[in-house]
Image (spheres, rainbow, N blue to C red):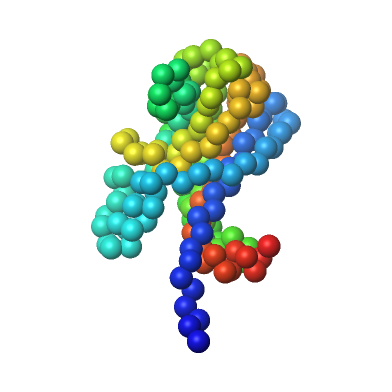
Length: 164
């Protein structure tokens, strides 16, 4: 009988916290890993020093009217203010990232028919993205900013199924 665990599962959660003075409103979603994320893991496992290509920024992008490309609508991507590894019995090891989006950094007006995504990225590569609605983004005003807490992990699929 083969007891090797051969299937792995990527899991990514994103909490968006809207800060309004002393009040915080929290919304949780799940993100999708980009191809580069999985290549990055493989390169790290092979001993390549990948610190220069590691996640550095949180970006907000809008889908362009022609094609599938998403272009940044921030004056510059938000530098990740928190990057660390955590462990819990439920989630195993997680890479955790925190970024902040303020209204004054959004260069484009939001439109109801627009398609938007948050991205975790380096200078040259995208690691993961989260589809986000214009309604969620419209909560960001001159007095309200969004704190985006991103968690990513990879674990054996069997372990994930046992916990559900």
